[in-house]
Length: 253
Image 1 (cartoon, one colour):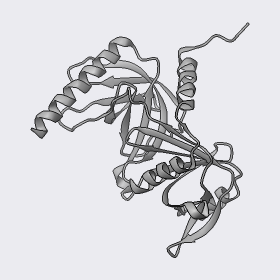
Image 2 (cartoon, one colour):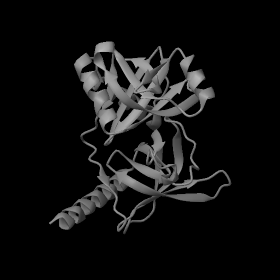
Image 3 (cartoon, one colour):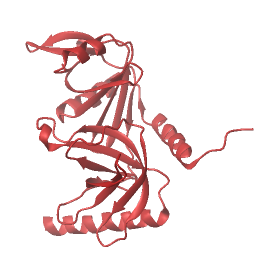
Image 4 (cartoon, one colour):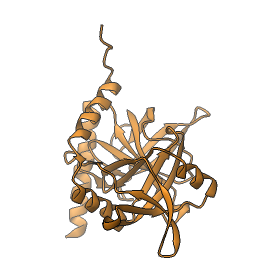
């Protein structure tokens, strides 16, 4: 007998199917997209040692003629050395709501513009997961939304929503309270939208980066996807997004 499919498992299966549709295997396309990450100063999360260790870096340059990508060298030499010994490293990033992922099996220390860097080969493939159906809007301070999460003591902590779409949202963790890896499920969450009742939701963490790479005090940003979202809650989210768009257009006029 086959194993029953749960809503969470189905959501992950659907995500895997979608990812295959956005697999970039063309070298020119891969170089172009990596350069977009560099140009936009996107933080890149590197996971290695079987997923037990993670560090943040960023793409500095893509050197096509040398088949190399130069990345920021980390401040912690002990962790740097462990990553240099890794035989498989998964890199994840985010660009304007697009999830990016690629994997390499070798990494070395090099110099770029006189500074130490990580050097990796240009990957053979790259996941560029652009969900056009999930239009994302930034949440202005005037009409804020929040997410409440249960903390370790059983109480709740409130987090500001930075942006939102029909498929997910990003929250701001100003005090670095959430040490959550991508793939973590948050099944005791409440979404608080203006002029709507609090709604119970399930979130899956997709990314975790500093909110501002150059200012640690700005906190960290967690990108999350909705899992098995209730239709009524989804409708309220769409109404909220529509209201934000109307407000944005009025501000621009």
